[in-house]
Image (cartoon, rainbow, N blue to C red; front, top):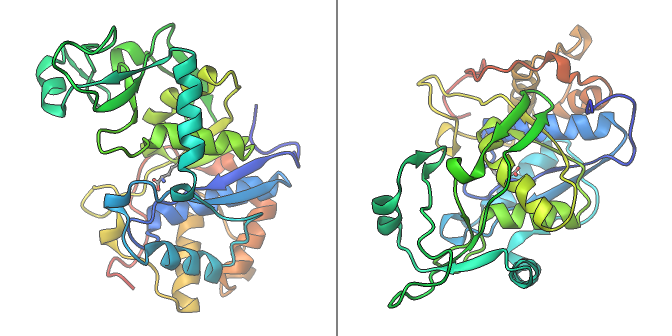
Length: 310
Ligand code: GLU
């Protein structure tokens, strides 16, 4: 189903940054794309701070991200969801899967998995199933994994079109609770999107390879998945994925306008000439009425930005 037409006020989109640094250009693109597509449908846009992976969380980064979003003129619906405050929900979800015997404790270390992996999958070594039918004698439980099986996961991405992934050969039984006790991103994102009633997930193409796992989890919770649209990856001039080391906009209105304009440009949107010197907020207002996913290019590319961190 197309993500934009006709208007669907029941649409619920979201933006889910990880506070591992200030809002960088790649995240801004995801914010602009998800915001405009939700608003254009007449729907809601939620904000979630993915601060579960505490070793990677940078103090002050969440506040800096929120300040930048606010200064750009993004408005979100409802309360911000903080993943770090939802551990009980993730535990309850894990227990539901335990009751259905869909998860198992795993005692393998990373080294053992690498050593026993028959082949490399889409995301590193494929779990070979060592602890699938019970912890071998002498092994202590470290992580909790989801048992995967069944047929290939197929879905239609709003930009990339039909995508399929055979989880058994590409990933294997995957981790839902890590050896350090932290709930895995794959579990948290599905539990949160499901509980918040998210119907469309718009985010960077680096997460395209996680989508089959998430759709599989929706099935485990007896729920239909949302629609997905993955935006092209923003690359730094050296061809690497843009990250926080490539800088964030300063708080000046001019910088914010420049970055939001660059995000629209990156997403193939032709802003009208009379918005040439309009503030970021007005650009978002235009996008909420006119954003056209048909213009978004597929290719990862380097945006037209001044690369010195502003
Ligand atoms: N927190 C993830 C990130 O910042 C995004 C997760 C998602 O949109 O599903 O890359």
